[in-house]
Amino acid sequence: MRDPNISKIFEVAKAENRNFLFEHEAKMLCSLYGIPITKIEVVKTEDAAVASANRIGFPIVLKIVSPQVLHKSDAGGVIVGVNDEKGIRESYQRIISNIKNNVPTAVIDGILVQEMAPKGTEIIIGSTVDPTFGPTIMFGLGGIFVEILKDVSFRLAPITKEDAWEMLDEIKAKKILDGARGMPKADKETIVNTLLAVSKMLIECPEIKELDMNPILVYEKGARAVDARVIL
Ligand code: ADP
Ligand code: MG
Image 1 (tube, rainbow, N blue to C red):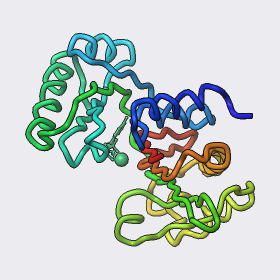
Image 2: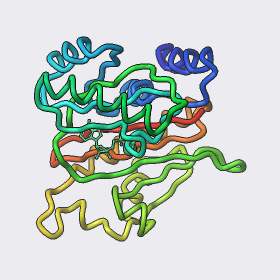
Image 3: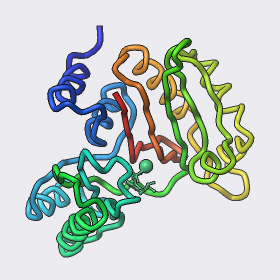
Image 4: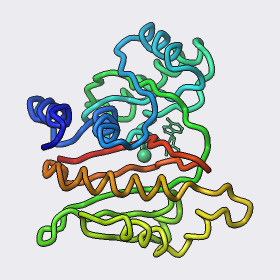
């Protein structure tokens, strides 16, 4: 049986009549399956944002929390690389004014304060539910590789460890993961474990209609999901 904390995340969304999880909820869900995420705190005031940033440690990323803003950077709802208290206060106000201008109908639930993850190889893991075959798992490299080149691999959940390794091997740009062209190597073992964790999540959580972890930053050792979106 799945961890009751997992069910609680879905219950809160349901009670609020939401058909999606906020980023911090989606990340909590990922974390409960052992997927590494950034440190996160949701705040509702500028002072609380400063206190939270001091707890988490600089540099910081601030993001909008609003049911009407699921694509946060398009709406001016993401500011990365905030280095000090003054920056937190300015960025907090800037995000709120961006959202008021760009999405006037948006209800602002708060601001998500999170650690800024170091640069790494960007990957994407996603899922949609096939009406006949159930949940699918997609893997690709971030940026142009998925968005323009559609260089991705797919499997139906659940997957085995062997399937996960094959998914890494099936993309055309796979050499990037091995450090081609002076790029740093990416920790493939961690990617495989993340794919397996996502597979388990999809099987245990029929509530999930869509999952989009975009991007996950992968390092020579370890990885960090810096954004996660779940549609219920
Ligand atoms: P969106 O809802 O627009 O997809 P994201 O949360 O993905 O917003 O943030 C936009 C971009 O900002 C990401 O693609 C990533 O490059 C960067 N970013 C977001 N959060 C972090 C973080 N915690 N650490 C480092 N970079 C981040
Ligand atoms: Mg994103």
